Length: 438
Image (cartoon, rainbow, N blue to C red):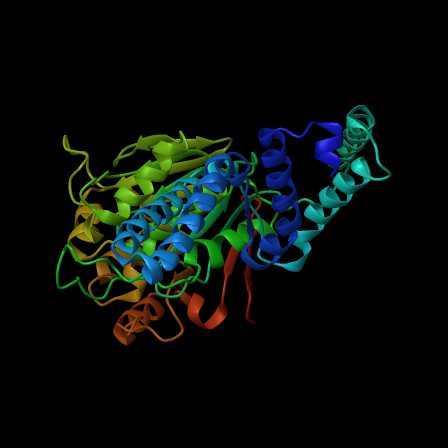
């Protein structure tokens, strides 16, 4: 074995080299099939390997004891079970180390960098090399990789950011998620989609059923961002704490480097918000709160916060009528994003006397009849109305009377359920509209 010859036969070197080898050998497969490679095992194996060896020995001894000395079988089995439980806990703990988990698109191309690393590792130890020769080869390979990355970074590349302001309303089914890219290059992800909880558990003590499938935030939102070349977002913003808006942001916060997370309310007693807050805390992501009257500046783009009103208690409810409402202005073009506000919030905003006129209205609450009152639609006077909704909504969204009300006001209605991702871009004057489905 190369490690014995070059590093010495100590248990520590053997464990480390075995962990590195196993991680590199399986990384191309896990990157391709699962879109992630965890590096936690490099350290945890120093605990996991001896625990597993003792646990397996205990299981074998308990089976033998059952045949020749039955009273010893149960204690041995119980001890082995406790060690296996500790192994499970170690795996869970390692899975929470987001900082050392490499996230990638779930596709075959994601395996290519790991195959390259695996090949370089093999080249380093090929031909019976010693430690110094292997280090020299790896140093040369590392220098070549670094220079290659710098050339890619400095080269012309293919820009993924529109020259101007762009809004992409993602097709996340029954939910909301929109990516805003600003002319100065900054990014803002508003909501992340999610799956709605249609009912509460019969017992609060019962374990919730969690299907072994990727959530909307990873399978749709993260994949969209990865394919556009993003590894970092400047800001994420949750309009409110409903699962179909905030849940996916938890996956995004795990998968990407985030500058800050923005909220109108921070209700720690809400399980979906608390889950996101836990990830933000573990990753050291700055948390900011905004309220009606605030203004965010991104170069020449102004983002006005129209709602919710200021409260002394930031942990107040973060329901539909406390959604963050934004009015984004760039040049002569204006976009009004309304979260899930309903009639009461709409009335409060209209009566507030501010300017609501916009070229684009993101229709509130997926086109529900509880929102989109005639005074609010008339005040917006939008040319386009985008409804983020599933192709077949379990709630009947968008409700026909809302669609008719929008059309009667002169708006062209576009739904993500029918057209897929809907994109708007502007240089401050012209407005370009693109949909995934024509």
